[in-house]
Length: 516
Image 1 (cartoon, helix red, strand yellow):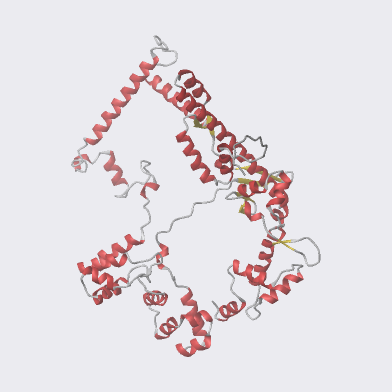
Image 2: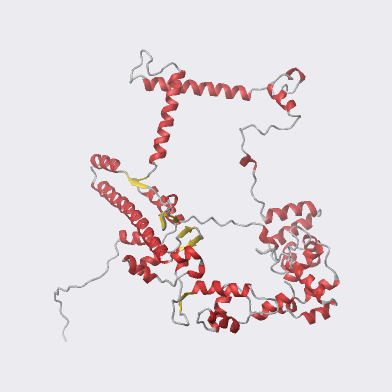
């Protein structure tokens, strides 16, 4: 068969993702913080975009005009001042500002030229500052508004700074201080020593015994339990700090695995205590901090700002609205675009301006479409989950994204993007929109299906209400849920229990027998 060239005409359909469409899809899944960062980046790159600060700009303009009027009045240049012309007004205003600046510089110079050596002499006893100081009995006057209270606040001390200050105060020997600096670098995030002491001794040219002796001194630092090499040593250091490390407690720390398994008989035999003493010792250990370093260097999580606000309507129903504080306000500067388009003759520059103008218009349109889509999806979720907002989690309906997509005429992937990292503030609390999508669990009598989240809530309520002498096993939980019409398998109960970090019935029985 010969290979030849020929021309053919074919017709086909394909989805073309233009850059503008990709941008609109990307904006849908961004959180409010990510969207603000994205808009800030666009404002820096696009000269035709500007922030919409309407009311604030008007207020600032009024304040500026008021300040100019005050300056004119002080200089005798009121609106009815004779001899004033519009052309001369700017020059006179500039002269007034210059005079004010000159007076400020003179006052500042006089302040710095004050003779502070003679300020506190008896000859100056009548000075206002000294009279005020004596009137308050030598106490500072906090009524002065020059410095606010927030200016006296300090930042949190890091763990490394806290330990270095103790090294300088508690370790007098310079060699111990150098060893201590190296040991600080071997701490992990929880405050435990990682690695061996031999490499430190080899690096510093000293014996391992010297490094171990320094480590023993540093194990008495604050917070108690720091520089421990394992969990038992960390707990022992804290108990020693409380003067509670007796032989029985040492035996208990040496057998933490038995405590974890709840083997009370073996622990009582090893520690030489009765059941009541063992329970008190277990409670005391539980009160200790297994990760002492976590009290430092804590990075506070940023607060979640809701994207949608929801509240009751006085006449019944719900009012769902977007949170205006999370919506970036940008405008296209059309007047600037028209001016530079008229003045620019270069074709390359004109093409760039046109591209930036189209990009700015599309961004404004995409932001508006994003806000409209979020509001539409949130409103439909509230409509379908109204029983949850009225009566609680037990009435949460099974819901999937396809249900919302069919109700509002959108694609399921769009619903998925809209409900990612978007939060709804309701009378029942703050929820991510994804929370309202849960799997369906059939009703045993053929009634309405149950939501998986409602089943979890019912399961947790049953476990929380169990008595110490009647711990509910997974099989027993299946039976109790079946009485409520919830048809669920035992493995599903175990999966839900583990997802809520609830231990097994055996572990719960051991914990409650030890009164932990």
